[in-house]
Image (cartoon, rainbow, N blue to C red):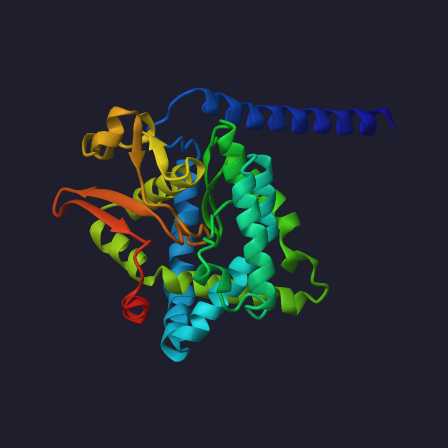
Length: 305
């Protein structure tokens, strides 16, 4: 009995020490300005990235391309609107944690309008009325209070994350209405549909990233970091947090210590690429390139005219 008790005690102590080190890493990284992403588990992360690439190229991308080809644009737009509307509890909690009461009001109004007049969120009626969506999640709320990102992590299938956003994912999962659907297959179907729609929006951007980067792992890592900073700082990222090449090309806003970055509208990711981000990539062969995922696809651009 004594030996069992001592074993349990040692295991509990080990877990507490690991938790302390993990959360300590978040607070320490929040105290310092970081140009470089902290990637202490890079060898493991690269292996997971390799696995994600195989799954994406052989399963996710073909399915997304088929979905994009078969369904008309209004159906795809409606599906995207539906899942954005479902994310309202996460947006609203993040707004309130950050004391962004105006945004909280916007998200509440959007949810009420789109759920009722917009037919359970399929039509973005609120946008037509000038009430814009503000992308938030619990990870950005933690970042708002200067909690550092911690170590860079690549999750199987889900793609890039970090210690702070991993905690945010857990909280957001409790705020996700889909999590409370009792039928497993309905849950799985909704999550799969959301993932396919997200991957569809990323087709052109991921293709461009693969073609323009010498190391796609590093490209995704940098793009993810820039996207998260953009969300945390509401499009005004402090110049000291930007990569050197971006800092050198900033205009008058840099003189005040800020650099304007186009705001994101979604952070869902498949194989590590945020749904909307502006990424720069320096390639010795092609030079410095910027890929902006905020740009609509050719089909969507035609509809907006």
